[in-house]
Length: 83
Image (cartoon, rainbow, N blue to C red; front, side, top):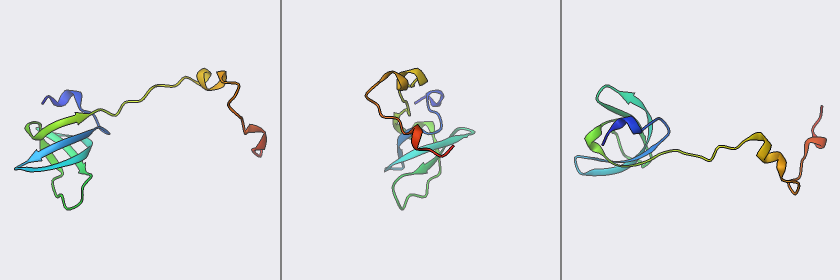
C-alpha cells in the first residue's frame, strides 16, 4: 500500500508477522508509519507499508457557518450566556 494517502488521524489495520491489530496513525517515519495501537497488549509502534492491510481515512463533512444559522428550528442559547 502506498503511504502517501495515509495521514495522521487515520485508522489502519496492520498485520505484522501474523499479528493483526488496528492502530491510529500518529505520523510518518523513514520507511513507514508511527501508529498508536487501539488494542491492548500490542507493542508495535512503527510499521512498514507492506504491513498495512486496510486503511480508513478520517474524513468529515465540512460545515459552513451559514449552514448552521439557516435552520430556524435550531434553538439558540446565546441569550443565556453571561456577557
